[in-house]
Amino acid sequence: MTKSDLRIGYVVEIATGKKYMVLPTSENTLTLARKGRFIDISDITDDLTCPNENFDIVKVYGYSEDPRESLFLDIAHRPLLWERKEETQEQPANSIESLNDFAKEVHQNAVDHGFWEKEPSFGEIIALCHSELSEALEAYRKKMPLVYFIDETADTDGSIEKDMSRYNGQKLEGIATEMIDCILRILDWCGANSIDVENLLCLKHEYNKTRPYKHGGKAL
Image (cartoon, rainbow, N blue to C red; front, side):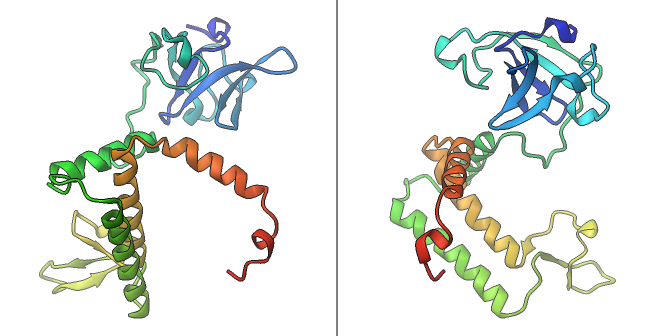
């Protein structure tokens, strides 16, 4: 497949795993669009590569078989037309391609570990989020590092280690870690309730841009 084979309404996947839709511009050319972000197709060569390898196109999906999804990036009902098998870059194990998919993964992990044997109430979810934030506050009050782990190797004798290059699967601690735990609690709930996290984040962020300075005079 070449650049000339791309059609308006196709969905492409770039090397980082993000998906974009092929859309027209006012100059009667094409662009790749994803939730307000654009890639100039003139930067893409005929073989669907790009000087910035992160923007190489590695997969092309055709028109959605479900007309209701024709305007969305969902590929569940789109045929895979082409794939750059020999050049597709594997994503690192710790990368996040889709926040929605990640929320589902976080929720499934909580299910697998027994935390949804009895479905928690909404109040319990909120309380658990509060508990993670309280732990972050206590870590801050104790002047703990943002992120650390306990290195129990013989030469360090259980000291606090902040150099993440030495990290090898130990339990993470610290202010930022507790804040992340709160985010994971929220994503767990979002995954359980099939919330479109990506879209809602963007919509709320765009709305917040329209609000007045300090939202009309709030102190905080």
